[in-house]
Length: 491
Image 1 (cartoon, rainbow, N blue to C red):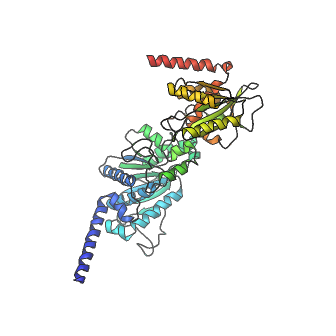
Image 2: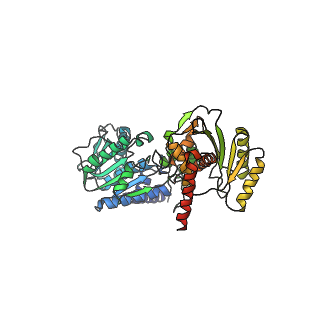
Image 3: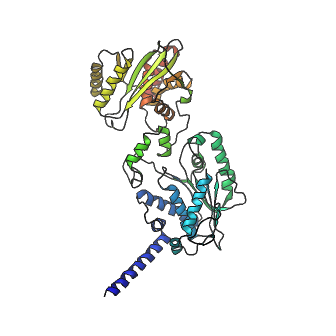
């Protein structure tokens, strides 16, 4: 009896293995699980596999698909793409693929990973007719073959890896894959570099496409005018598969603030990364929302850094409070802005901010006032309604002995920021060096992009309006803008 049971179990295992092989042949998601038994699974990985499988169906049906995949680093994009190329070549060994990236190292890494997979015994079970030339011991041996080209045995298909701007003359492709065409922010901010990448893409890469070829781009977004930005601007048919690391709003598979792939990168891990990054870098790399480096309203590169301000400087510390509904995710910020009468320049002296409960905000406001000393005027915004009146009355009482002014905000945030922005952009604003500088500069840069926080800009804009700057004509200009906006709304 024992022998019979053993034979039955072996037969069941063989049947299960055949079923898994058949599923791997039909489904890209099943293929990934079969080839990687320890694969970390999640809705994101399944969805990405489904999107890529649809891309393949569009490719073989002659629809000339164009797909952009935007996702945070270390979320499995590149590994998934290598698996996908292997699965596609299994179905069609005559497919010619060219893979390009900013680094030769990335291309070689993809090449060797593809060799290891196609040369494995498991792969041959799924796709026995897709073979590649391997040296020495052959399959499952050491992979020291050409690291630039993989050719299919007995077929016309191939995989060639190159770099962006690399020569591909005389080649033809059915599947063009671009994995990160720029190395990082420095290159992305260069107009020359962006133009160079675009010229290579339009003049060299796309001219290699066969009649029904498909385009697949995987990249980190650093700039709105990058390769993906230009492709999307010129080709409305391109499909974009883009998900931020932390959801900005409720989505089909997750709620606001939840991680994209928590099985691999938890929310806590991602937030720890965010704390050490510039806001614009975080939004680009992890949230897939790049902003132009020069900003939409402010040009912070025109700010001059100084070590200290002259004694004649007149200071105002203005506050911007987080909304009462979301104090733990919004910031309360206090910006100290000075005016130098002799030079008619402004200086950002200090900015502090906090995410916290009302009692924590109150403690920060009071302790900051004491640290500033009584020569620094304090400006506090008044929210509409009775609650706003009660709040400012409470703060005025807590700040007894200090010069405190309160007033409601008028107009929208961008309108309020324009007078201060005009001075920044004209080069009339300095900033005292400190460890708080980078977050301020970064927020100025991205302000107006509907991305990230704006609390530091708001408090500095309020501080600017507290100064007596009528000689610049800015107060009259601001008031006229507000009146024009009110009239427009009535119409």
